Image 1 (cartoon, rainbow, N blue to C red):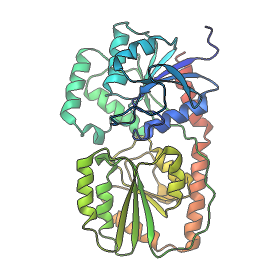
Image 2: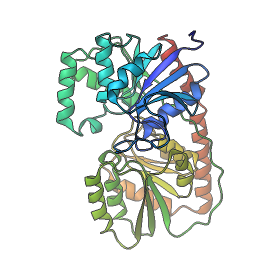
Image 3: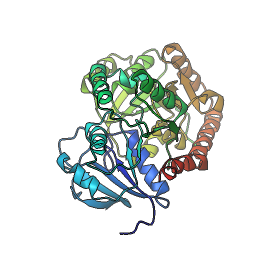
Image 4: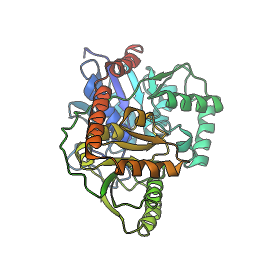
Length: 385
């Protein structure tokens, strides 16, 4: 069959309708949505959400189907992966993890052994190579890297994709430290695909409503956020949203929640669908996720597109937030500065908060509609075809 457009085969551990896989789901959905006129995308993913015991209901498995205008193969039996890959005449293989055994490591081995096509490969680690991420399950990751280097698993011609200058440095540092040769690391920021929310003026309640929306895992640093709130002396409501990825960590958070002062109210709502994120955050005064590291952070742009200012660590690409008038990015070692930021925000009058919300919308709009970002993502693939 004749191909009208270049074909990109994407492998990713979790995709829609899953929600527990976090940012990479949004990244790939936005990519295929915004670039489908230039490329034909095929996507192979797991048949279930992250850590779920059951397959998605009402979705045909182990066959190519159309899901939201994308060709998707929901893999139930991992032994079928080579057949699924070889059923497609693709031009570029696009991997979205460094450590995934099924959706990255095995395909690279098969490519090396010519069990699948030796087309160009793009590998986007999606933040896995940051120092904070590498410190989790450190021994297991070091062992894998040792074996991968022995096998020459990563060919020099492989294209490494970073979503920011900071992630490019993380990738370069990791590859150099582990003596993995590489030709280049290309920066192409993740594509956003949002419509700014409409703002409604609300009365300035005496209680500050704060939203934490992310995976409940050590990297996202909910415990730190709770420790900060422990020091706040004015009324606060914290709404927590996200899948329980690390139950041991969540139990530690619960212990702290149960010992918070009476002026701090906390409620956990569980995981929500991606399409509910923007509207959910719009109901809050402030978005607070002091993450230990993000290569991008779609949820921060979703918060800004909802008109909600953000309070983050300095471990994301989103910097100089206070200068832009849309929030704060603060080093995690400066806990008092987080407390001061919350206090300063609490003391803002209604008109100043309203202007801040408008600045959030304007900034989100500039990110979402960036032609430069679209062109950078297109260029990665076009240069390889």
